[in-house]
Image (cartoon, rainbow, N blue to C red; front, side, top):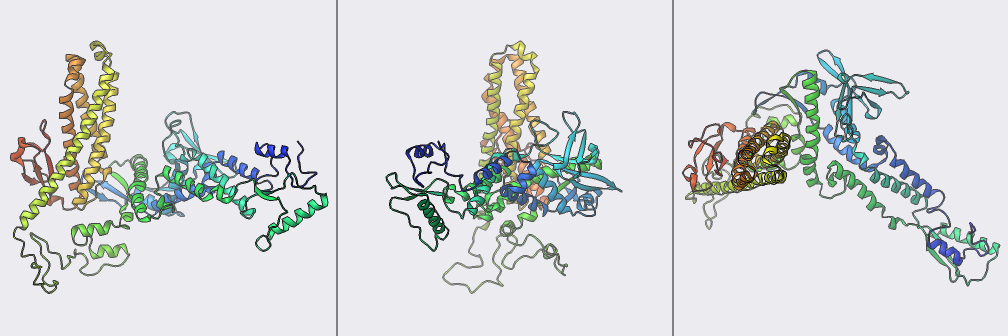
Length: 637
């Protein structure tokens, strides 16, 4: 077919031309005009093979999400504490490690240094800093991740780092000189795997769309069109065709002022993609949503949701803590332990700085009935000097502390004779009312413990299912000999128990922390939680294994219902009880707290209501839920 089928009859489509257009084997000219199609394809191909730095620089979606995380983390205060015991920590702002992170080097602030590390980590899943001895401290210089090469043949860790300069030369450093914060990588544990690899196709589509947007803008954001002229139209001379083309071109350029007029039978038809059909905004929004979803950023934080307030609360509660804890855990191991040989210290970001920006402070004030900080504490947050009398907690005049509190007579309005006494004197049994409220709260505590027990029993059921599948084809002798199977089953049970205990303790701890006006921190109980899960898995697995080896598989599995019930009660009740005690230890006023026995059945009904100080033993000689089959609970007040 000739390259230009309209040679003899301008702007007239022959039957062959129409067939070629229908099967897309020929196009009158490239979409959007000129070399637009090739430029869009080039943009897509470039993004498919681009470096991580290119994707961060050229993708608005990636840049927006990464920067919102790094910027917010950079605003947090990084603090160093010494763990005196399980419930007490002392700040150590003058420790050399704290000073090293507060003043990384002569030219870089702490905020800028942390932002640089987080930006590299979010882009590459690797962040590097050169550690330079400076007296009893360490100076840090940020090393761009794009310039670092991992050296050595070790399977588990880097044996050296090569920093490539801009001029093509390089410098080698030992692992002791480099602080390397890395993420997970299923292919090479020595270096993190960038999440942008997962997003590469999304970023490539977004890059192609950006190029198409530019081309559409250059074309005046108009839909590409061609003129249809019917076959029965009379033939045109070259002069007539050229004259019509020139007139139509001029009218199209001035279409806002001069109407476009076609001859009879002619039609303007589209052969490209209009801005509306391209759905540019929807595709661009989809790219941001995919990137934000992978990094765990709520859409309201990147301008994709109108409910910004809820997005901020979710961002500060669910997005920032995992990144911050990962970074501080790395600093504890790399700086405190390896560099300073100090195992009692721990770094921690002050996330309360962000939480206090929402309704948390108002909620705490409302729950307690009076301010939760003194005047000088509030003034210190504003960098204002203290004032006399500002170190005492203010109690509003309409709040009285004690039994049966009543409104202050100094601020009450005139008594309405048609209403009950506004001073509260009409209350005949205020303590009974308080007791009823307490009983209702304890009933809810017992119901939650029942749900926790059900979760724990489900874990034991799952373990029995696993054992039954693994043992049904084994003889007694092979069971005795195959210790690796039992180790594997025990490890899976420990992982299942750990996940369930973590869910129970975090749920119950946060509920009681709110009840006691405290703040429950899972980071302080992580080691204990792991030990609790390992100990429970060892005991349960060893018991079942002993029964199998002594009595056989069928006899051991016949005790399944009994073990599931007793082990589930023990796990669920002990985790619930421990979470409440830990929340009380982390909350203010620990020494004034008491624990109250909540009976589950008539079996231990005589102990119901027993009240002892938080750190004291129970009169029964055992704790609620610790005796075999006991599902009693405990409240802390």
